[in-house]
Image 1: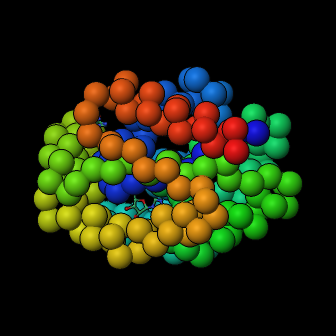
Image 2: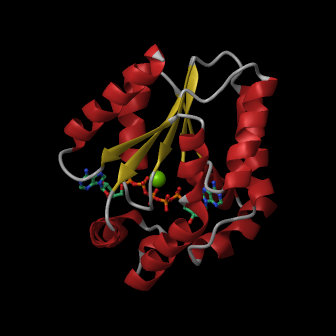
Length: 193
Ligand code: AP5
Ligand code: MG
């Protein structure tokens, strides 16, 4: 099985690259941001609670996203692998993911981190905000808040995987296809370990 964590700040290209990775490796895509937005669209209680935090660029509580991932792993027991996009975003989430995968006799193959600096992230998300309708893309202050949240709470997750020898950084700036090739190269290396 291939279980890939695609890591990086808001706007780094996790969703963009996930689509290409799914097409190549036939993985199940688990994006906690997409799952939360589905809950909001469906008007569930979980969605209503998450919406106010997401609209402010603040992380939702760990137990909410861990519960969603737990359900999805159980629903997809015959999948050839998973791509985790926007999860784990805190060290407790990373620990919980390891525990859940152990129950399924599985493990993370590698984490690939897309490295993009803040000015480029802001440009990309403001541009997407003109058409996406995502409330959290609507103004620069909010986007910078999301990046700050990432820097404070999420960057330690890179160290968590680095300590396990499962961290690979990729330059996330440039041609989308070239970035994809670089990710695939890291995946191949990790599969040979
Ligand atoms: P989430 O939905 O995960 O959003 P995010 O991580 O903030 O980032 P994006 O999805 O906006 O960016 P992306 O990296 O996928 O980039 P994309 O490919 O779209 O989370 C939203 C919220 O949900 C969080 O703030 C939090 O509240 C909550 N949440 C989610 N998961 C959580 C968790 N685990 N724990 C707690 N809370 C959680 O690309 C961005 C743009 O750039 C696009 O327009 C794209 O076309 C463009 N682009 C992509 N690649 C390139 C390139 N190489 N060059 C130029 N443009 C590019
Ligand atoms: Mg995304």
